Length: 568
Ligand SMILES: Cc1cc2nc3c(=O)[nH]c(=O)nc-3n(C[C@H](O)[C@H](O)[C@H](O)COP(=O)(O)OP(=O)(O)OC[C@H]3O[C@@H](n4cnc5c(N)ncnc54)[C@H](O)[C@@H]3O)c2cc1C
Ligand SMILES: *[C@@H]1O[C@H](CO)[C@@H](O)[C@H](O)[C@H]1NC(C)=O
Ligand SMILES: *[C@@H]1O[C@H](CO)[C@@H](O)[C@H](O)[C@H]1NC(C)=O
Ligand SMILES: *[C@@H]1O[C@H](CO)[C@@H](O)[C@H](O)[C@H]1NC(C)=O
Ligand SMILES: *[C@@H]1O[C@H](CO)[C@@H](O)[C@H](O)[C@H]1NC(C)=O
Ligand SMILES: *[C@@H]1O[C@H](CO)[C@@H](O)[C@H](O)[C@H]1NC(C)=O
Ligand SMILES: *[C@@H]1O[C@H](CO)[C@@H](O)[C@H](O)[C@H]1NC(C)=O
Ligand SMILES: *[C@@H]1O[C@H](CO)[C@@H](O)[C@H](O)[C@H]1NC(C)=O
Ligand SMILES: *[C@@H]1O[C@H](CO)[C@@H](O)[C@H](O)[C@H]1NC(C)=O
Ligand SMILES: *[C@@H]1O[C@H](CO)[C@@H](O)[C@H](O)[C@H]1NC(C)=O
Image (cartoon, rainbow, N blue to C red; front, side, top):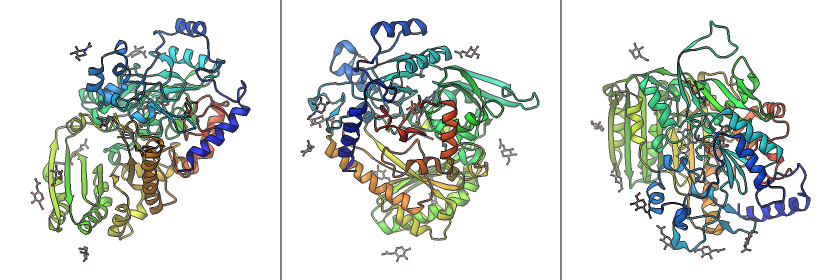
């Protein structure tokens, strides 16, 4: 990774020689090819809202005319506040831009750093879309002027796919329509094919809104969990797979979608489902966000609401051997827990373990009985301080409310992930696997696969087939202080890459979750898409022959330079 800067310099140096105004390079702001004010005014006259001029969210702390810095400070770590700002990314590193010479441009909340507030990777102008018509106009404009553009929903993307330096923005955040269907028949299906209790969400609906709507109809819907539920229900989450604590019971996001509407590269607004544009529907379920067009709505199945019960195990350790023993015990129990319907989240490092999982339709007593052996095992190990309890919630919302607080966002962050196949989890040597994982500086251990996820046909969606055979999701991450220089950032990144090597080494033929990954994946085509890459690439050629839609480490992006501005 220390080579990265010099490599970028070489790549950009070479392309700038050949990057004359041809269709081989996209146009960015500040270039002569960038549309004139009057051209932007023409666009403005065709869309429902005034054009927006996003700025980094800390701007009011440098320029009081731009807003109220007190409000900025109050909202900074709140995922919903960030998603309401077209110029904010959930992780602040994606608001910055690193020039080939290593200079980092950004706008930091910490004004004492003495760095001027600059635009960084925040798009400079864009459309605040409210309708499919708005999206169609925005795409036509971007295509006509050959613009480097991004689609942004909430800005959660861990690879910064929803921001780009000097870009044009298609913002879907305000497409908040929620429609409940007592009965829904996919377009093109015979009337006999009907699904009851179905939701259609506009592209901008977020999980906190979707969960609230589902609760009002006494239904459960498979969705993401993040502080305050700010991840989008119809954007990148779904396109990448969409994992959930209840996926072992009800499948991944991609297994629960019935129909998607999308504006494709030719400007058409089309329906994709099992009966119309079936290949596109397949690609939209696992082929990644920002690659196929702009999704305008998504229709999901739901499940009957039930009570849930959850088990929590929180451990501090001063004895590394005990940590490994307890983690080994969690690993040993994992296959049976997942089969019984428990899903959820955990994580560990040598000095602590956290594990909390839930299952629908079981009482706290049943969960207590299931987990007692694990709790007793934890209590038996020397050097551990153990907190353990079980709780029953009247419905999914009750569990979900735990996460309605700030956190995770408003700081720089880079992550990666690796799916552990069944054979690797069930080797009969759980303590050894625990030892491998504990070589990282700390890792996530999620039960979001297996069960129903494994029962789906691996070819039924574009999702990397390795998901269907996996039992555990592991993840690693790194971070740094806003304002860190490239040397410091590369040191943090180096630790991430070390940890990535450890988790990938456990099962080299498996894969990563493309939504929770890094810009430094070793072989992203294989780890994100596996055996589906070639078919996805062919579908992209059919629907987007000029690669209008480009995202980092997305299908077809390897044919472009590091900034996705010029073809290589
Ligand atoms: C705090 C946090 C918690 C998370 N929790 C979970 C979780 O529980 N489960 C899980 O699976 N993942 C989770 N993720 C990862 C999440 O799935 C990804 O960050 C995902 O990309 C978010 O999608 P978005 O649309 O909300 O975000 P954005 O950053 O706005 O978009 C992500 C990508 O999708 C594209 N995109 C967005 N909208 C559209 C559209 N309408 N049409 C076409 N392309 C579009 C964008 O161009 C971009 O490439 C979490 C991430 C964070 C930061
Ligand atoms: C900023 O907003 C806060 C409340 O959110 C208010 O108390 C304060 O007066 C505002 N400051 C300015 C300069 O408007
Ligand atoms: C790095 O490049 C940027 C953009 O060209 C320029 O503004 C900046 O001054 C350069 N920094 C150094 C230290 O050369
Ligand atoms: C802000 O930056 C200054 C100067 O680098 C540093 O001393 C201070 O700790 C930072 N404050 C925060 C809250 O990070
Ligand atoms: C929102 O949904 C309603 C039906 O619930 C529909 O009539 C309306 O056209 C939708 N609006 C948009 C912008 O899709
Ligand atoms: C670590 O724990 C295992 C399992 O209880 C035990 O067999 C081993 O002796 C312990 N090792 C040390 C160094 O305590
Ligand atoms: C809940 O469990 C009961 C008894 O095991 C079963 O009859 C019922 O169908 C289950 N409900 C749901 C929604 O799964
Ligand atoms: C924690 O686990 C122990 C078994 O070691 C059990 O006796 C106790 O009831 C558990 N506590 C709670 C609150 O469930
Ligand atoms: C673990 O340590 C943290 C930080 O000191 C503390 O807040 C927490 O209560 C401890 N948990 C247990 C189970 O001991
Ligand atoms: C980066 O910051 C560190 C810590 O402040 C400093 O020691 C180092 O010289 C800086 N490196 C560069 C290239 O500016």
